[in-house]
Image 1 (cartoon, one colour):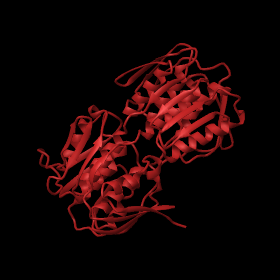
Image 2 (cartoon, rainbow, N blue to C red):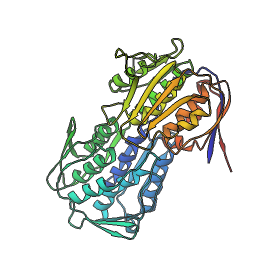
Image 3 (cartoon, rainbow, N blue to C red):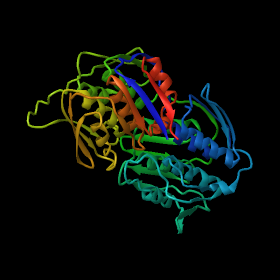
Image 4 (cartoon, rainbow, N blue to C red):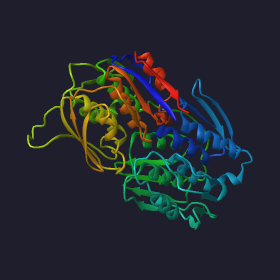
Length: 432
């Protein structure tokens, strides 16, 4: 277990260059299995999930040349590969599911040895993925706790309508469709920025992916080739550092190569009295007095933040706004329309003295502006909940500890180094 020790009460100021988006990097890495030619990637972040996938590639027998100092990666799956690696062990990250299409394309079969896990957000079923694989012709059988999938004749084009606009299910569909015989069509597809970036990567490899609103059309090609691709800025990390500036009363600038993704995020910040500006490739926030929840014009309802699949506010960002609500004068309701297990950490906020009420598994209300004191709190295994707890701690003068904060390392390289460069006093401490 790794903890964060925070000496709070410091206004964070300065400029930050964000890393690439974990949710784009991981499917892109999995997508490299679809070609036997070399792929070169730039700006690959040094995060735990990336290291796990690269370690898997090495076990597979692929050639991996990774320079985490520069972020440059060259990966080549063109040699003699280890067929036994087509057995995927239980893992603590859900991204392993996205290795399935590539492994089936390489070997004609793959086995999931146990339940694939990830952040503790609630029930995250694999049935939608299995349905997709079956649509493309996979034969699926269960053997005890394992699930075996075989596709001896290769992928055949499919049409499918998802129950829910799942990001990873959409990406698995697109990977299966990329080399399937014929044209495939997916309705109710996810359209998050990282999904769009993933599609751009596949097209750079020679795929024919077209998307519009909630529908994706993929014309299968005989084979994909190698490519060179540079990963973009992570909108999650940009919003996170802007929120850190707001909650500590500081002034932070973050490089942002796609400000067009931010109108709804900016309007959500404005609900707490926080103004975000975008100029010359940078996004910035500065303190304009105390945080205060903006009253809605409909006087008999609470101001609210609703999070759901894109183009809604991303659910991954909801915790950072809950942290702002703890500090802001007024009441705010938060509605997570996706996960039923993502809001159970409000009891940890109470240890700071915050007033937050869990209404049901999907909604919580904060009663902000209360006096807060430093505390020792424990994060669930959810990346931005650990960050939200850090944000509250950073806004309170005195020493706080966030136990089990290691999920942050799954998405944010140089997290502590960046914070200390902004004037924070924070360090990682390993617990025995």
